[in-house]
Image (cartoon, rainbow, N blue to C red; front, side):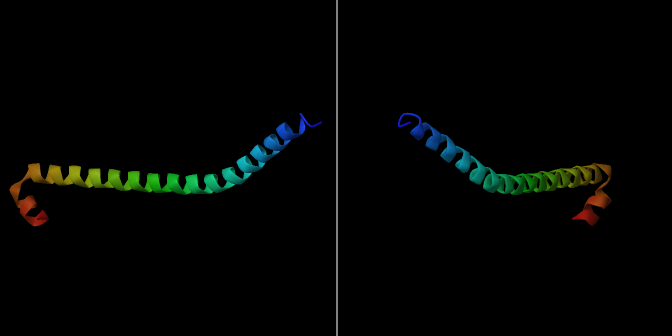
Length: 68
């Protein structure tokens, strides 16, 4: 019994830790993920705007004056 007991304790502790950690990290990771997605969306929007501006710039000088 003495040889088996510590292993069982370690396993049970590991399980407890995993459960406790997984819940906290899951919510945190989902939060982080949403943040990343938001940042990516903003970046893409900026890129699209920049491209549109570039098109405007190349089209004619009058548009550039209005834009700026």
